Image 1 (cartoon, helix red, strand yellow):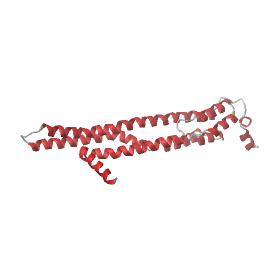
Image 2 (cartoon, rainbow, N blue to C red; image 1 turned 120 degrees about the vertical axis):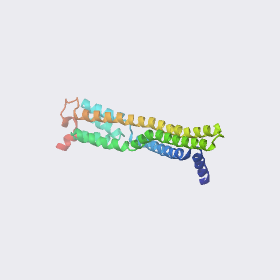
Image 3 (tube, rainbow, N blue to C red; image 1 turned 180 degrees about the horizontal axis):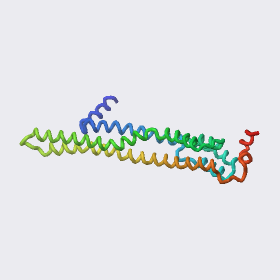
Image 4 (cartoon, one colour; image 1 turned 30 degrees about the vertical axis):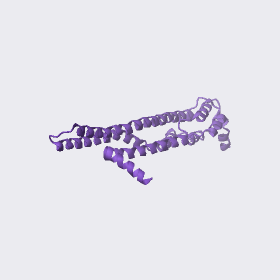
Length: 219
């Protein structure tokens, strides 16, 4: 098994040089990070806030009991933040900071993906430049006995690094954009939830009448 892997690595090195080998390692790291982020998003419930949204709607309508019931069914990672607001935390900045802490945890790894998306094409271009230099050196050494196949072979090998760089960068950029879009949507939702809870429309009943738990705590 080890020998097979070593042979594969050596063939890649011979085909595209060290740059292609580096890009191959980077692509494996990107795949690992993307799979981890997908698992992390699934566990945290990113984008799945139906029960949480219903709880906020009930709270906004003045139905505190229904809001608590919906909160108990929610598996969103924003539940602790919303619970703080429902339990009497009225500082919007504090609540938004708590939400941002959770966003930062879910956004870990985004900078690595962004760096790969930007640097992989440049790394591929760097490999192409090195390959072209090698090809023209071989052409110069050939002197008068110029063989077009020498130049052509050197050029396609050199251009291979650019193609590999783009092949790594483009999917990374697409996946990163999708992940960022999910987080942006959750960030907007969190802000709406916080401000809705702090300033609900259903103010017909007093807070103690609408929320038996809070009334009991003041008794």
